[in-house]
Length: 213
Length: 395
Ligand SMILES: Nc1ncnc2c1ncn2[C@@H]1O[C@H](COP(=O)(O)OP(=O)(O)OP(=O)(O)O)[C@@H](O)[C@H]1O
Ligand SMILES: [Mg+2]
Image 1 (cartoon, rainbow over the protein chains, first blue to last red):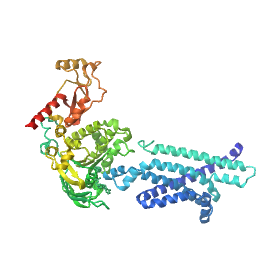
Image 2: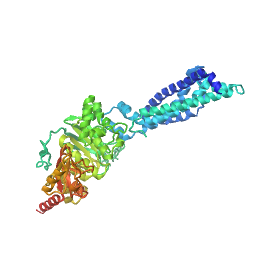
Image 3: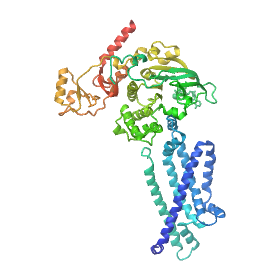
Image 4: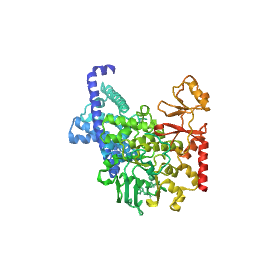
């Protein structure tokens, strides 16, 4: 298998980068969307029920099905792959962001109000920083999950390590089938671990020392 | 500021005039009503009240009588159903809520510090909202930490979780004072700390107030705290009806009705101990030593005075220790490591007894503004004072 990797090292590196790139971008966009939604939900309590239902149901849609569905709208390419990954990535972050924002101590919020902080200032200076550790935990879950979802996106012609897995599966019995599948899978795991490490460091850098556990 | 011991005992607001410039503003409540939606009886049924500028007014009453509601209407955390509130003559609805609140200090139980911000950032919040420049803010933070007895270089960059409960509460007070507001609202500020820390915090508040003369409205559950801190006490009944609103002396001496009597409780001669300030009894001036002084010289002085212990002062004239002569070792007087419990001159005799009982010297060190050393109150002085009170009472 070593020879297999060395022979294809350039293509392999390229695909690994593509895979990481797709996931990171999708998770970033998803995080922004999820936090915005969570802010909205915590301001309008009526939205909370539906939001929880959607994220619960959303996670049960098989990613394969969603990817195929998107295919009918967007045809092949990296766009449906991106949308599919981002869609799933939103859900864990959304759930954590809602929990995190709601978990902010009410007396602290009253204190903020009592000091004359506007709603926006309170959100930016108090609520988000205090909810951030919980939100970030959601981002880590989301990142791990998205690594897998992105692999499936290869089915619609998305870029990344999924292409190797797909090739391996379609060539079952063929000469390099196992190698393709293995390299794809191990690649995904390695990228996932690296991404998690990066998020861990991001947490170190962005979570206030006063609330770090 | 000078500390004039002969003047201090008088507590009537008029007598305090001239002690320091009043920086507070008068608060007037007129027919203020609060009825929460779905409630049958109003939480506050028409409260009318004048809180004079520069005074501490304590709100006290049974649980649920409307203390917190009344307090929060002053900074519009709760909107009154009807009635008007004026601060310094101006209707509080004349400006935006946030503008109003930035000019009113708000201190609640436990300090309610933001855990993700350092002590300095917590204190700097309101000045920042008011757009002060960074230099002015950092000077102000230092000044305030100093004022509440926390060494700025040591505590400025700590997070709230790295502070004790009492220290957090001190920072809470500093934060309330940050933008130098004329009015400060406090809701059971010292409810969450142990009795000794509470006594210290109360002393500090009195010492700060002596310098600043703000208008302070403070809710409490503790009648002794109300007597100690209040220039006036507002005793409320169900629905925030005023049972009595007067100075502690009048409330103790002439309770308006049975409700007040019950509320204040019996044993009023013991309560008198809460009315008398340490500064009203005679202070002893035992031998003192300054950190860094020659031990031999200090011992000579003490022996000449017939003292077996000395009060050690730091370079800023603040008492830091009270060692026996035999505990003084080495060539020069070192900064003691023990934690000396001092009494502010406005601490009550009640507090003094507490502190003395836990001291091996049978006395307690008394301090004035900014912890400046004043002298020592001893057991005999307190018992003498009680005896003279009793004689007065007998006529
Ligand atoms: N947000 C609210 N909605 C409805 N009723 C309320 C609300 N806040 C307070 N009340 C009611 O109004 C009354 C006065 O409450 P308030 O909090 O002012 O009492 P308090 O004197 O501060 O009591 P405590 O000493 O227990 O703090 C109580 O009967 C309380 O149940
Ligand atoms: Mg209350």
